[in-house]
Length: 175
Length: 75
Image 1 (cartoon, chains in turn red, green):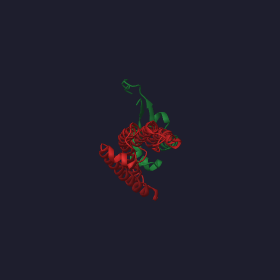
Image 2 (tube, chains in turn blue, yellow):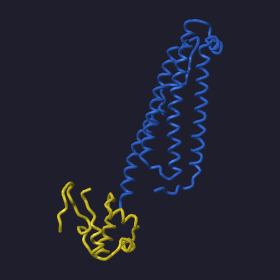
Image 3 (cartoon, chains in turn brown, green):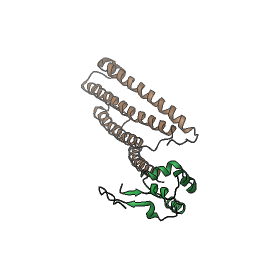
Image 4 (cartoon, chains in turn green, cyan):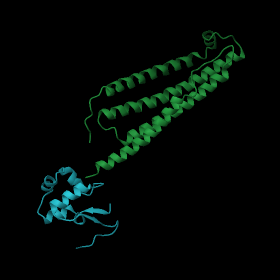
């Protein structure tokens, strides 16, 4: 049975923020797609990064192309996370947050966060592989203790949610 | 489930309706109906206590056990 939700500013704010992040994620996707469309024009990239034609420069361009493709994968993962988060915020609004579907959503979010962390490690490795002392490539990716902590927390939270949902079902069947 | 609720028989014997019983023990008709139809997952001791008080019976008169797949004996 739906329960009245206490009035709090957090809910409308979360709703707006998640919607905003979904929009920003789409914009990020468009930007990466644009980069991929431009990347065949090697000269443009060379001049943008002030690279002189050389085997190292070609390696950097190839590396950036791979990173852009991986970035698209990241956009997809962000979309998976944000859509589920939006759906969860919606269930809080309707007063039915402790549902098995939300536990499933949290588990999916946890897997997507894990995939994002792994993607970050791969992107960091590519950056280091193509980086040279003359043309250092810093992609601001790699191991993040906060990121891995978020993965762990979300997996634990998903389990807690599943257990809480089961307990609530039991309580609802108690007379 | 192998646990059966025998509220129907008790109510019939005492010429009492489910609504009367719900009012006497202070739980909603909907919840009492869930119990009567065997859809409840658990029963609180406080509910059982109130039922025994109102129906002047023992917990064993309200609840019974019938093994799965075994036909209940005719009394």
